[in-house]
Amino acid sequence: MYTLELASMMYTYFTMFVFVLIVLDLSHNKLISLDWLLDSTMEFLGLLTLSYNRIVSPRPGALQNLSSLHAVFLDHNNITALPDRFFDSSAEKIE
Image 1: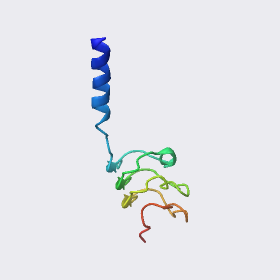
Image 2: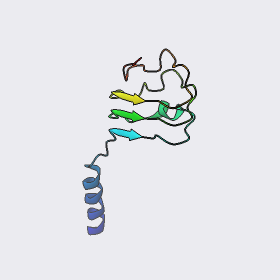
Image 3: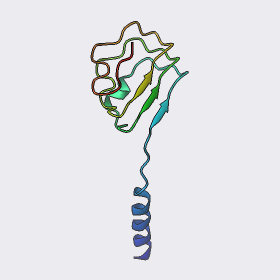
Image 4: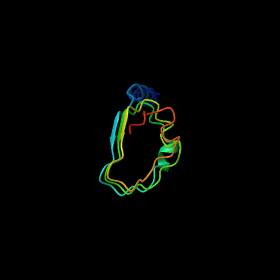
């Protein structure tokens, strides 16, 4: 009984600490797509750096789940144009 209580207490104790990702730097990789962002649950992500990858044509709404996103860096990729709805409800498009 004591071990079970201790395990329960430890679980409760550790669940109080929430890992919040605010900055994600994935620059200098070999990313070709942003499809993984469509299922993302990084609601507090504020800065996303995807520079120096191999991204070609991101899908519309790729950043839609990143509601706290303030800036995204996509420089030095193979992107020629961004879809109209790429930034839906997230970062403001900067020309």
